[in-house]
Length: 97
Image 1 (cartoon, helix red, strand yellow):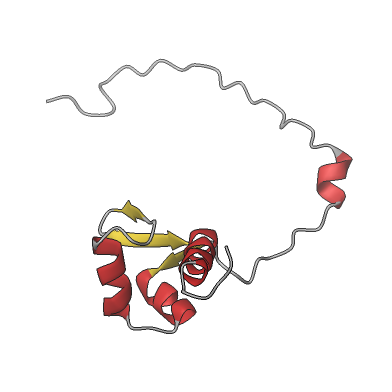
Image 2 (cartoon, one colour):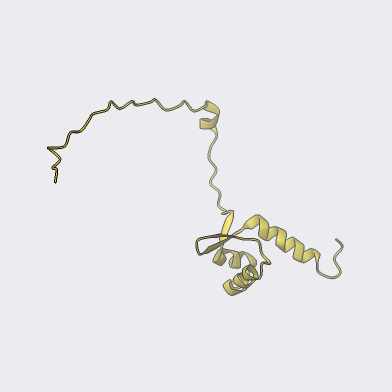
């Protein structure tokens, strides 16, 4: 077994690079925090639709609502929810398409 003092370590010079310059236009633009998340978890989507979590899970499992899955989490895009709502409203009887 070799100890650290017995091992030969070669030294390689470290080259440090200067960070790239950021254009002044980028620095001057204020970052506006978005209070609305784009991707909603099942609980947030249920609150957005004013329904239960299980109703949203059922819609996801039947493939009615477009969604993505990351691990075990289902995420629903707010824009897709709005499109889905508009499609459901347009399909109601008595509505002109």
